[in-house]
Structure formats: C-alpha cells, structure tokens
Length: 242
Image 1 (cartoon, rainbow, N blue to C red):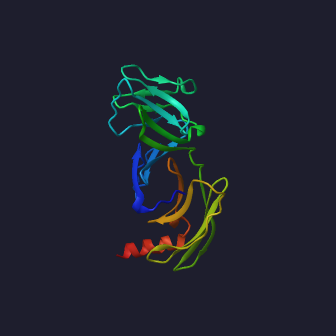
Image 2: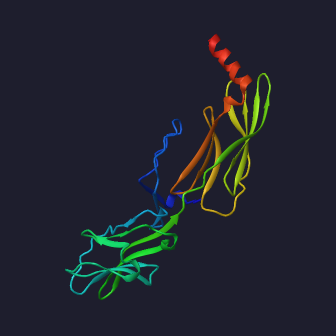
Image 3: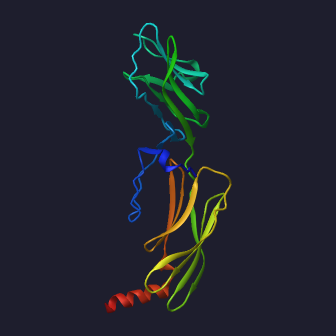
C-alpha cells in the first residue's frame, strides 16, 4: 500500500480508472503518477510503454547537449544541436527521443526498468531539467470471496466472509436487521510485504472484495440478501405493505 502525506501529494492519472461504486464501472488503469516532494513517481503496468516529458523549455546550442540518464550513471539517449538524437546500445530499438522538447519514450517496460530517470542539459555546467522515479508493477492477482458462515433468525442475519488472493486473506463480519446492513467487524490483513491492497467492504446490498495496486484492480461481489433469505423475504413483505 502506498501512503503519502496529503499536504505533499498531487495525483495525475493517465489512461485512468473511473470508479462509480454504485455501478462498479471500471476502465483500465495502466499508469499512475504522484508528485511527492517535487519528484514525480510514475507507476506503470509491466509491458506497457513509458513516456517521460520535459516540462521546462530546453534550447540546445553548439556548446550544450541533453542526456536522458537511468540511475544517474547509465546513458539512455543523447540529443545534439541540429542533429538527430542518438540512442545508446543497451536501449537501441526500445527507446526514442521525440518532439521539440526531447520527450523520452521507452517501449515494453520491464521490472529492470524501475529506477530514477533524469534529463540533464550538459554544457559549462550540468542542469537537471526533468526527474522521475519509475516503478514497474505486475497486475494484481484475482480474488475470491467466500461466505464462511451464516447465522440467521427472523429479524437479523450475521455473515462471516473471507476475501482472499494466492498469498493473503482478510475476513470480516456483516450484520443485517430489518432496516439495513452494516459491517460489524473487519479482520486484519494476512499478507506478505507487498505493494498491493486487499480490502472488503459493504456497498448497498453488495459485499465487495477488492485487490488493487497503483496500476490494476480485481474485485468480486456477493449480494448479501442471497444469504439472508429470511431477511430478504421480510423486507419484501414490508415493502409490499407500504
């Protein structure tokens, strides 16, 4: 889970996920950008293309060059005055520099591409004109949502459910009466140290299990009235009387 101080956080989502929890309307999320203390953190889905832009205006002359660097010491590409950019051997075929302001495009990113990227104008002095921290992530694994136990009476219903992935799980209890349902108890997450989040919550008549990281999202739902038969029938009778 990625936790930031709100005062230091600006969020920019590209190809983003649009979430209407009432409708569970999901669109693909492939890149997530946060600005932390002035440094852009870019989370990108493994295998996608990465574009890094230089926001400052860059003008090269005969005495200045521009370098895109990876982890400070590895040169990705070099731009000359009045000449086409040169991509260094390790990145040839995968990297391009384009546009008037020398944006970098890195294709088919791998986990080994995670790290710090800087654009440096080199002349009499070196000046950083762009800086990014890139984190490449895999899509999260699917989730399972199981109902472990149901304790039902004429006027109430209690359910215990478990939300699980291949290496983590979380359990929670839900209680319904004749008026509404609520989450009575939320268990603690059982997981290895990881960069994804597993949560379980109630939205209207649905129990939702959600597994997500910054670039992907998997979920399962169960309708709570499917397990609280007596409660469901009583609510229907009340509604019919109204």
